[in-house]
Structure formats: C-alpha cells, structure tokens
Image 1 (tube, one colour):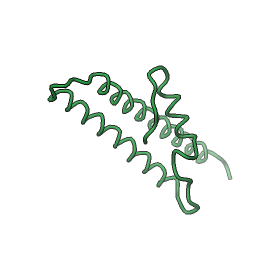
Image 2 (tube, helix red, strand yellow):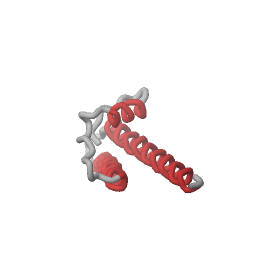
Image 3 (cartoon, helix red, strand yellow):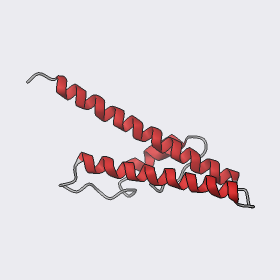
Length: 102
C-alpha cells in the first residue's frame, strides 16, 4: 500500500488512498471478498515488514534516521488498525445477515 502519509492525520490520508480508484486496480468480476481481504492482509504485512527493517536499520546503522523509523512504525500501526476495523465491520455485517429471518 504505497500512499502519502502526513503526520497530522495519517488515517485520513490512508482512507483517501483507499478510496481513490487509481490507487488500486479495479475489482474484477470474479474477485471475491476473500481475495480482496487477503490482498489487504498482504499489504499490511508488507508495511509491517518495512517498519521492522527500518527499526533494525536504526539500531545497527551509524546514520540514525529516527524520523523515518517513526513514520514507518506509524504507517504500520495505522494500517493494522484500519485492517482490524475492516475485519470488525465485516464480522458484524456477517452476524447481522445471519440474524435475518428468511
């Protein structure tokens, strides 16, 4: 998930990046919700791994980039929180559908 993040409202920037059609390819007719969620998991995992690399680089390098490290960590945190909120919404929607009487 390559998006521009600002320090004032990173969650708003992430939401805008997800809403832009150019940020991600359009969903194909056969693509399921599970595939979409799996891609989101992979994207969050990639951001988490980048944050871990920045932390390791910060600890071992002579050039200390605390700003870049903190930005990477915040990106990872925000993306994980967003993923958890999406999961919670999907779960509550599923539970609501299961409660419907046919």
